[in-house]
Length: 533
Image 1 (tube, one colour):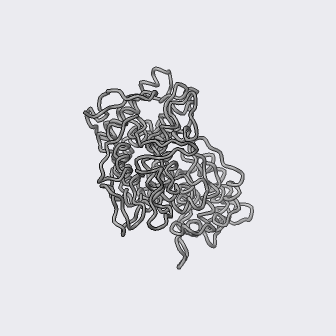
Image 2 (cartoon, one colour):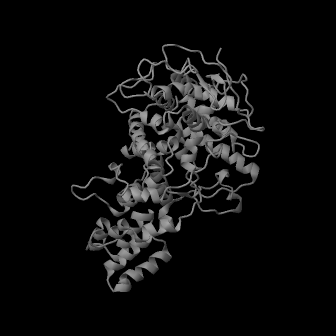
Image 3 (cartoon, helix red, strand yellow):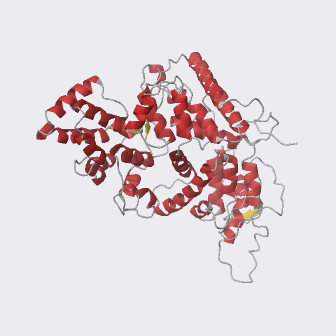
């Protein structure tokens, strides 16, 4: 009989109902249940939620979260002209089916699985991994299967491991995941526990902590599943046997600094059932992604929620609940977890449900003191754009196109001197993106950088030149277009009156087109453009 685990903080295995029990809701039904659970919590805590976001705020937010960029002016008008009462739901469906979703979702999971920290070698491997993720997402591979494929990745392109998780040598392969972790068992164990189980097991790598739930033995028992990877990628002279300390690579490992060899064992304490036809990593991958492993499904559901809100129901997402940091709205996270399992780990289903909730579609403006706690989700937290979101939004807003014969910077991964690479490095953000601030160096990069200078030049700026030179438009229409292109809304009354006077007077140089260029530059450098509201 399959074993079940509770959500308890202590390390134990106890009988519990299957997380897959219960009906599978539609995305619309789950969105409604999200709102009902949050509304009940707000009532109990006497929280007054923020009002719904207007169409402009919602539109910019959902484009950034689903496609990784701001909407084009034409897309804004297309949405506003749609008379359908369910036009927001229709838009979400269109965006989730858009080709750019694949690229943005690949960026999202690449950053979760392989955070680079600005390391150029890690960046190279991360971009290789992104290519593999794109293929998985394009094929709608369920998340549990994708993780199994990743953890049991071939150790060389020409030698897939034993077991069912194989990939032909002529296909894109997730080998970069192993390479980025230097084929070291301890690095792979640490990443697996943190990324996919929400457990920081690496804290016990060197020694036991008196008040920690995980021991050093727990860590190295997990690392043992990866011990064969490191051995396969070391140089061993011909006809030389494996080191005597490891008679069973992939099934045992020696703890560094100790004369102790531990056998592979799951963190819950269970011994694996070995199958000689399968690589030990494939057996570990089956356990990690099991429908009955609450750590895996809960962590995945929490990460999707954090993608939409910038903060998890359990935050940070790669840590466990404690008395000091409990799960906020635990019934909601449990239901999201159950529905993810019921829908066979379809992350897009969960994303669709969250995007359709009223909670996601609330304003980011704090309209009542009770909304101060971001984890109440009574208002939308303000989030700093990721570097890729900023680049793609800038290129969308200014109408950027590579010059004839010039390689698209998005494809030039190895050129760390490109404008895109420099911007991505400059705007690398910490893990938490809520309520962040722009640094002085980041502000200077936009104010004085060549990309913005070219984009706001009447000679080289594609969108600006087109707007400024269009004879049929009034100054007011041109001003509105620049606002829509950058901050995805028309100017407010006070903005319109002040800036329209500035433009019509020709600004500081007595030229209307030059004054429009000044306004465009100011909008691209505004904090409103740099954040997702």
